[in-house]
Image (cartoon, rainbow, N blue to C red; front, side, top):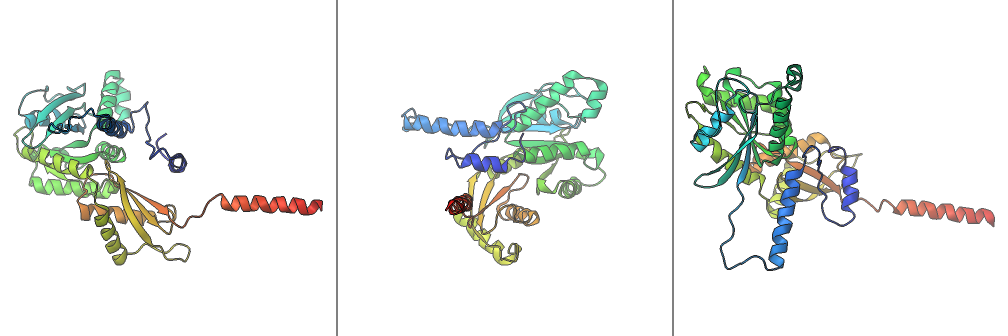
Length: 354
């Protein structure tokens, strides 16, 4: 199970083998993080054993992995064809044409991409009512593509004028899995208002309904007519680099000082809370560890949420999970009191014998 294991992870980390990675082999959770660590270890071994020829130019960076997600018939396949400027995947007005997750390699002027067009995701109840086993497999492929992607594009239909529960659920899954997210508000040619107004409306709904998703970037497009499609990949590249970047420790601690001066954390059990230091142990997604005189359980969740929001504003981390943990630097040895208690019992037993 992927939740509620913070204590177990802390205990495992005390063994001294480094930071543990949570995975679910059955469901594919955490596999992208595992693959990233394995690649880093592989490159380190190659370098130590002299496999790398440092006289040659460095190898190209791996392509940015992108998954296009959404409900049926919102224009995902048409969007992919417009992005690569080629009719690579089948499109049409009939819902459910795309059954398999189709990966397409594409290179722009600035980056290389591996873009996966996925099948439309309907509610589980409707799939069960139709009894379509193939569609269930298609949805599983779509979710697997999401878990392996760096950036996910959630495509919405402009005619709906608002997000459905299914789309909110998809956005929630993307963020909880730790992937970066952008939203493409497609079919903007069918709107009565301007594309910008629609994009702002979608953004407001996301902020209200799924606040932990963060300040997601929304791009208004008409894939059918090619309007606004040129803005999609630059946003993907921008979000990817933010998701994949480590912030300098000095900059982080300057930010923490300013935050603490302007709005310090609330007191706990009558004593003043103080955040002493912050580091970023990993990226993908950005993960931070604050060292304070209180524990993570004692730090109010609304204050952690405030820190996430301020971090998004300060460092431009829109559309991605920001994980913040708190370590209490004042914690004493948890076994010290147990040893003292055991000694007291032993001395008492000896005293009773005498």
